Length: 464
Image 1 (cartoon, rainbow, N blue to C red):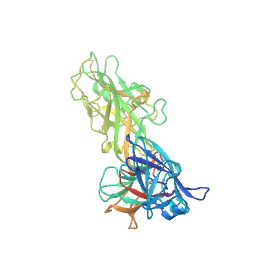
Image 2: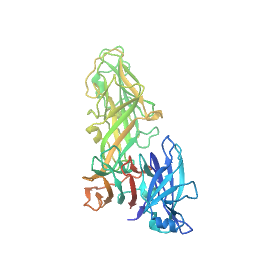
Image 3: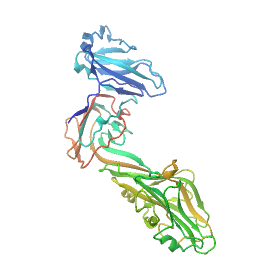
Image 4: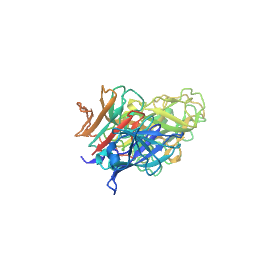
């Protein structure tokens, strides 16, 4: 494998701060140094922020960067003063006068010996390390990571050792458990007109001046209007104003989402569909109106036609929203059940419908009421405002190392030959099958040691 990210060289920072380290280079004076940045992400000023490094004192003295004294060794760099108190191979560094939200850049000289550029990176209270996204760091389907440092394996929320959002993470999964996992949380919208992969809109049956019976309206194979470029999607019905037991209109909504960017090996663990309501009508006598998500199967993924009217399912994909709870000026969210999750396609377009769920979907004839309406409206993708949104949480693969006490550990993860493993120190690795797994590439940065999970870290590697 080719090493893509070498040992992190640099210092860290404590007390709600973030480090973005740079690699060490060989100066033209044949001294080694590391450039690093310290960022205060809090609203409070900081003074004398401590950092611990491991360097041989003799190397610094030999390079003329340190003077021995009665209380150890003190150094002042050429730039803003950074003071070191040395004992053996430990160096205490203090970054002075770091104002709220301020970032300061420093250069750390290490002497003549390349090995002297190995630093422990101390994250401290609420500190963590970020590494800017880079295409060369994307893990893909064949990679190895290795990280060394002192790990707090007590249970805690979001204790991430390694975290690339919507791609990969290593974290504390309960007390004494360390889990490596490829997972994500992605959102999708239908296309606005002109559609490229996914359409939304409604198909309407219009019975005309005299109306039709409920069975004629409900069971029609062909409707009268397919609207896939309007700003509003309507779902529900109108009763005829004059003729008893006749209905004028019935609307059904369609929502398609291109979910083909989900990893091929992804298992959907949860999902929601949210629509932004703009109006609703319940002109009695109906007191039990509801709306829900169902399947759909239009003739194409990019346009609606009138024959799509009957291409809707009757199995509910979520808990229905009642008329009273439907927000006519805000978001309405459906949490998908097992049937709804099964309808999400990881390599294609996921297709849904919105129907009135008390009468239309189960084909129950509602009480006729002259000229009255039972309808809701919500914004479509063509509104360019609050688009319908499908949010999907997924997992590709995960493996957990159990019984790991707090302390200094080497944590290694490997994805190779369809096997995913995590190994703690030199113990037998924990493994699981990982057929077809590829960690997705994205633009998210790498975050190391989030939420005090690793008070100090010696290094982090990625090989591909």
